[in-house]
Length: 319
Length: 250
Picture (cartoon, each protein chain N blue to C red):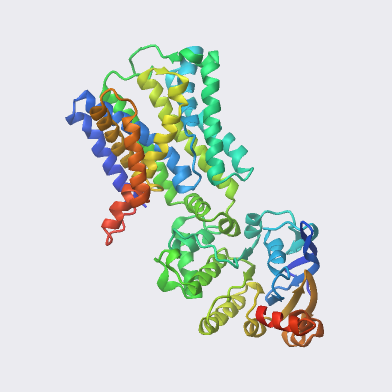
């Protein structure tokens, strides 16, 4: 059992050492954003990669985590750590609610994807008009650096915080892989009727998956809020994060523990490259993303992880 | 006679104007192999699906071990001990044979290693032991049929519903499968099988139901059913045209 966790722990430990050797703010910022995307992608991957339920609207979880953290501390004076935790719980609740509405109605495939997209858009529009969320002006978390306010004095601390979140999410996914729930989840992805015939409660499995998925992606939103201290509807509930969440998993390796992390690093590097090359021309990063997605789907449908595995046939690197 | 393990009682299923199953009653007694035969389109698979829970009947009820399970979802029935295979095989294509069978084994074994061990034991019983690490997508038709059987068996059922597990197999593969099915029954699992391969069902079943146009037209021992005038008529039709069509489809 512990053998399966060891590679994850080793990589997490190695990443944790990075700030001790790298002091460049650019590099640490790059890694922080990449890890945040990996976190959002890990949430997406649990539902989409393992469970086969493709969401186009994971922004609804990211935004809920972000707004919960911001609104609860700014408007209600709740401790930022508690607000952050509440954001995760709310992400889970929103996941359960969306799952209840969609999966119980039997929505699958592109229908499920479209409905999740709609949920995220509805959330974005509500957030852009509701005074509680700051409406069009957005919401600002006052700068107050310190441990109790969950605002980090150094980039290294923020990096370690998001690394801990990514690590927890990856270990959770790795643990699920080795459990009945994981086996049932993959069975549902592969063939719902066959799973049902073997005693799998398909609805319960999907609801558990979307609940956990929502919680994980909401934690990425909470981290965003605590790091950038400003949110508006387009940032929190915008389609960009829905796209990034699914791209990291698909490019990195769908349905694998490593996929979102590897995908996030690669995509974030491409996005930086796009900024270098394009200068002020906005959207070049998205063009690159599109090109990469086409290449991956065409030549490496199992993503970078799948590609690496197929290049090393002798070793079935289960991780 | 004792209470049957499973009973489909006066089942009627309609699809729009079409009556697929019409007032059909079928008993499966514990420890037996019961065959369900009939011409194409007779409603066999539909009747089967009502017992497994994939099709809700418009009338009638399904009893299992004395309890009314008519409104129970398929996964709940699997927990009670009803397992089915699919006529059109439904492997988890992306998983290995071992992982496929383990999904079934997880019904009774919560732990991953217990489920995997149980999966290996079941693979042994159906002759898949050497293919455990192969992806299910790589199996031949015969292999996939065995996999269907193995997954269903891994749920440790009391009643196993086999939907044409012999269809599409060549004669030597059928010869290999017959003792496997018999061994399953001898291991204490009651079997209800839909089958088109007549020699096989005649050799295996102790009791046969014949379904034609949604109705049970005959029931009894294999030899008696084979001689039944209504059965011969259902299969071979009335005239020469019916005879030709019946022969092509049977």
